[in-house]
Length: 374
Image (cartoon, rainbow, N blue to C red; front, top):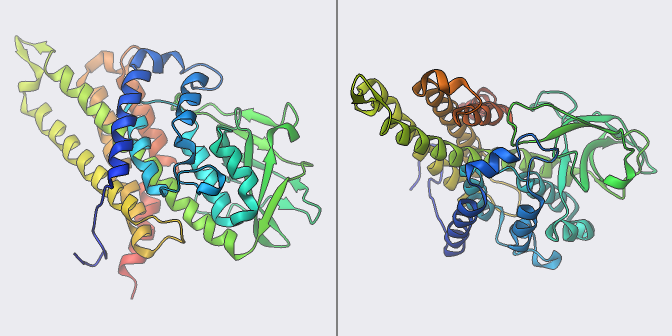
């Protein structure tokens, strides 16, 4: 089928379906809400034993080549796993580690294999990208000298406090570059933890000044890899949000079916029925956009169809997550604003989702450029 948007196909392979089933079962077993809440105020934000089980399942290598111990299933196959983790509100470094591996592989190729293998074996990796809070800038202000020494810092680096490897976006001789830094090369005070609204997430500011990189690459491959990284990041955040919106909807429906007011179940009132249906439709739309994008992302440079799909997925998932989180708080009334109600977790996840890898306005701006230009 063709349209102004190009190819609208959605495909779920047998392997991806199996990953979805396994991931849903894993999350149901490992992420009851009490277990999620137990990690909200810990230093890492996740259970190290749960992370190791995910590594043992091969999830850190789903999208990496077999030459480094990966499964070579393509980055689209990470989507079912991430959606399931989102449904469990399960905080882990999987998204950041996957994106770091993709950026490093797409830019460095075979030269980066020693570090890619460490990722598949379970070392936590992350991308140090932001020079400011603007996802739309080049974010290459940090300098890399000819001797491989970095000078500068990065902001809001995901999982910075627990990362073993940092893929640092920088510049060398005025050209975009990447540098790999090992955690042991950083001083004890180089990482300053951020306070985030979504307590299932962790990030920090990192000072890389005077640190020597163990690997670097520069040139056109870095430019192309960074473009893909931004789009893949938007896709994985959207997949997580789609799962979280579904979990939020389940909580809303359960409450509407049990809470009574004036002798009637509140779910019988149209003022609550209609927004709930809107959430359901929006969540299903988000899943469709996400799996459409997962169908089009490849190991090569992402096509126009893939870019359109990733941006649309991020817009739809962000919008429905924001709406679901807001309605969940409102429907629960006074208790919905309290820490004891799970609604607070969803509205916090919505705020994080809206900003990570560009908010809906950012992606709509690019979609307008792509779809409406001559």
